[in-house]
Every structure is written in C-alpha cells, then in structure tokens.
Image 1: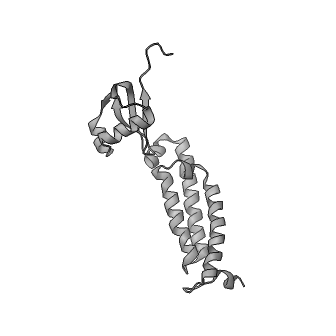
Image 2: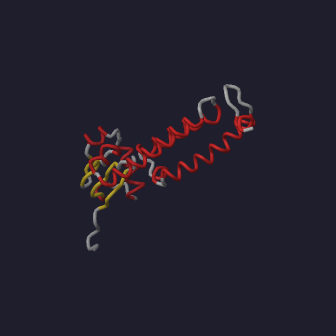
Image 3: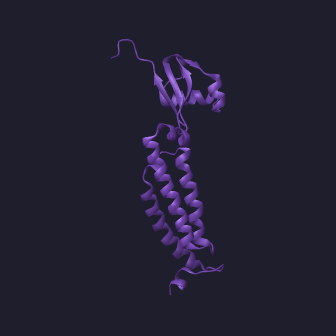
Amino acid sequence: MLNDLIGSGPELTVLQMGTRAFFIFIIALILIRLAGIRAFGMKSAFDNIIILLLGAILSRAVYSSDSVPGILLACLVIVLMHRVFAILCVYSDWFGKLVKGDRTLLLRNGKSIPENMRSSLISHKDLDEGLRMAGHTEQHHNIEAAYLERNGHISVIRKASPGAD
C-alpha cells in the first residue's frame, strides 16, 4: 500500500509525486526547525548553504527514483553540520571568521578605503547606497565608519553630534 501511495522506480504518477511533496514539506519543516531560525533569518553565505542544499536535495525526494531514506539522511547530516558549525562559531572567534568571514572597513572618518572596496567588490555607488540606507545620509563627512558586514550588508556608524551624550 505504501508503495502505491508514494511509488518507486523511475515512473511516478502525479498523485505519487503530490503525496511525496506533502510528506517532504512536513519533513522540510521539521528539518528547518531543527536547523534553527538563524539558518533562515541571517542570510549570510554560511546560512545560504543550508537553504540551497536542502532545496536541491529534498526536491529529488519528490520527483526522482532516488532512495528517499538516503535523501533524508543527507539532509539531516547537512542540518546537523550547520548546527554544529554555528555552535562552534559561538565559542570560537577564529572558527567563526573561517566559516563566516569578517567585516571589512570601507570608510573611515568620511574617507573611503579604495583597496578594501576593491577587494570586497564594492563600488562607490554601492557604498553611497549603503550610506543612504543604513546611515540615512549621502554625506561621507557625517560618517565615522562604514563596514561591509559578513552578511553582505553595509553598516554605518555616524559621527557623534556636538553636544550629544
């Protein structure tokens, strides 16, 4: 009966693929909850890996004749690796930098740092966009520092206003 419901081999019916999709959706939800909110909220390169791999691998369980238990085991290994690496990053700054990278200073005291911008592939227009979005200004002289963060966003530290505490 289970074989009729989910099928096996290279010829799957539309109903079998739909049934597989139903079960894979539930399994994917369980795997995502196991991976933790961080994996799907931060959007760093480290976190995007799990999204890409789970999507690619789980899709095979819906339409292909590959071993469903093997596919699920591969997904579980990926989720557990992501979780272990994230835990190691919490306790080891060195490991965190290795896995996730580090921030890059793009602008200091209103002056851009061309070599850091080049190595990060950030143009002056990209930097200006980041200043507008994160710093709410187009004036470089109002900025103490701007960084390209590990998640690819530009963060901005504005200069303190005179008389501000």
